[in-house]
Image 1 (tube, rainbow, N blue to C red):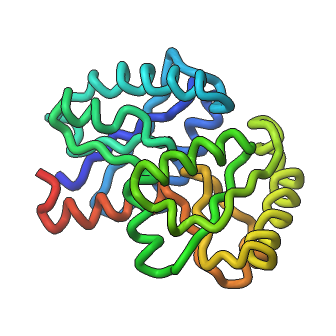
Image 2: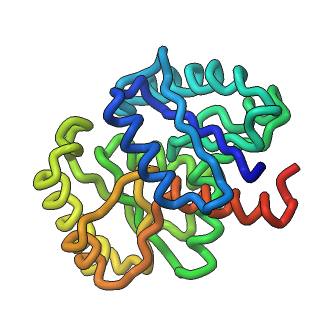
Length: 222
């Protein structure tokens, strides 16, 4: 039957955004993995504030508890803030993964330190708090933000220019050995990836899915 993963959006997203998320996970899923992205019918339209994040936690939990163990083997929350992962795992009994919790130890296997790049400063602050909660604060050398809105992030030119600026800063000024992106499913154009000058770039959603697959196929998810 293969590995069946329910992926829950952190937003009340547009159909185009859900399709984008589905496409990104499909591209990274193994041949024996089936992924399905679920939208939130009640939830924030962007994660800009702590209030948005609290709304997200509630909405993700409400969607997650609908999950039937006969339909899915695991749940992945498509949110770098790992919304409701512990509550859902306890309530459903289904292994539930948060991208940041899964990615952090892997970053530290290959890099002595890292920077976080998120869309806005408040996201960077909230994400760094989560990193501290998980016990990895000693590894962060900086947090950077693109300084653009959620809608602006969908504009390729605006996004690319902002990301290139921040990548150059984390490399040249912050001396980061790696970067964790403050987004689960962003994709970088070749010119943007080249600005990283070869340092590892971690996309938490993609990393988490790969880790989950390995755990499943090694019979470590039950």
